[in-house]
Figure (tube, rainbow, N blue to C red):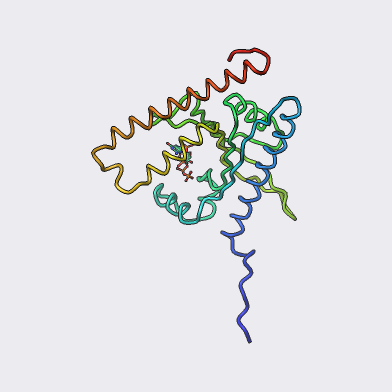
Length: 213
Ligand code: 0O2
């Protein structure tokens, strides 16, 4: 007789990853709903785009190893908060805080951690608002609460972070003698992009009712 094919839904790792995928979908939908509602009483919608991703198995195992954690599902669920990631790209910095507050006010969302790298940028210049939230997913026979990492950024913050990420992973950059100079230039670009955000927000303030921010 032909060997029985394993049922993929019984693979516990795959099952856990599917729960994280569902949790990211729930959070993405919440932002899409807020985007529609917030665009009703103004000219533009606050969200430019949303990118959802699941951490790859390789990155998960590498992170467990780096932190000296056991390779178990419970170690993943208890310690890694960024298996499911939702990145929300906004038009203006003030929209970031409006969206974050609106999400956190929802009854089924629990805030686990908030890191404001906009008020307090990282030493290299990185800016974004990070939230770790727990959201319920409603399965056939149970409800599970899953953690999702939300990163809220403006287009300018995302532009800088994407290019910095690409450059950081260039082979041997950290060992090169130009590293300090390159880091200084990248930080300078981060400051210029922060200024662009402020200037654009001011223009929007002038257009929408003459309020200067
Ligand atoms: P990827 O490939 O985007 O997933 P932890 O996540 O717990 O290991 P920490 O410091 O608590 O570490 O997390 P933090 O500071 O909240 O940042 C995690 C994520 O934010 C990163 O995920 C990046 O996506 C983004 N990030 C943080 N700092 C930088 C930075 O300096 N430059 C860029 N481009 N992105 C940054 P990963 O897993 O590193 O990467």
